[in-house]
Length: 397
Image (cartoon, rainbow, N blue to C red; front, side, top):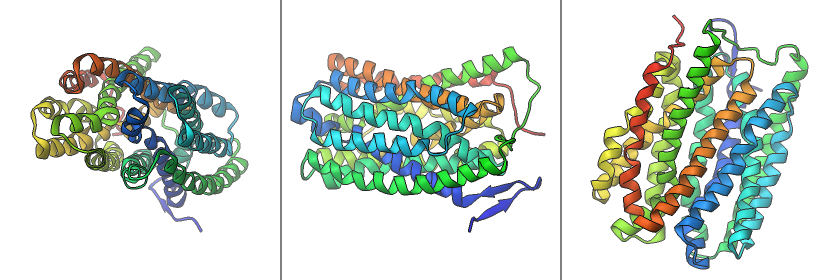
């Protein structure tokens, strides 16, 4: 039996499906989070450079990004309820592969398999959360996103508890997450298929049309992509290299560093919960603007803080900067309401792509200048968020 709530227009929000898709997102991103979490182990075992670590992230996120707009474009025209099941099989294969990988190129192949699974998962999942939203798209997107954030947060913690004290082959334990994910995604797929059969002539039952000229829409999409560049380039320095940063600056062990990363990732998840509903209430433009540009003073202070205040600043930065993404996705969907899959795939893909590019370039920079220098340079990136001033306000009157 589905738990639903009804808004003023009679549209029903299907909480059971939203929580299922959120939990599936948690498991999907938990598997993804294994990759950066095992970097210190792989770097130590196979004598990898920071440049190679950056290339591993580049390979994963480029694979995850390059397919997403195409998956979204195709499924806009031909919805595939069971496509997510195929995606989880790719991720499962990647987990098995990376458990046994013993050289740089094998690791690259493994992360590409996981990236392909992610590329298939996200566009259709974003569409499902929209279909189940009952018109409260910001809240629905936050519920969906927070599952992924918690999965990302749990990754380094579980790796620290399961893999670090033992060996690389203990990554195989994450097969359990993939198997649970397959069962949940299959249940969601049957709901989605049934929904499409019942309402096959209204694949987008919740659409708000605006009267913006085409050039204004194109400019707004361009601004959002620039904001994504700023946000995810900076986030790449936090997610990919934060363990190395605190290990180098504060002389921590791998396990200690993973727990500090966990603190930041939990804060990131909390910010995601807040971002969507606040965007519904106050307008997505203002949430996007505050989220990216508002992190600037804290990012600038971070390289000069001791360990305690580093944790404090990372919590504040995580909460602020993460609140943007649900608002960005829904805002973009409202700009192009008839292309939900394509626009979701484009923005998820571009986000992964910027994370990939950031990781690769920052790895090269870290090899030449040191990881602490990277954090000094990256602290200026959130300033770019000031361009959100030029976004039109789509908030309903």
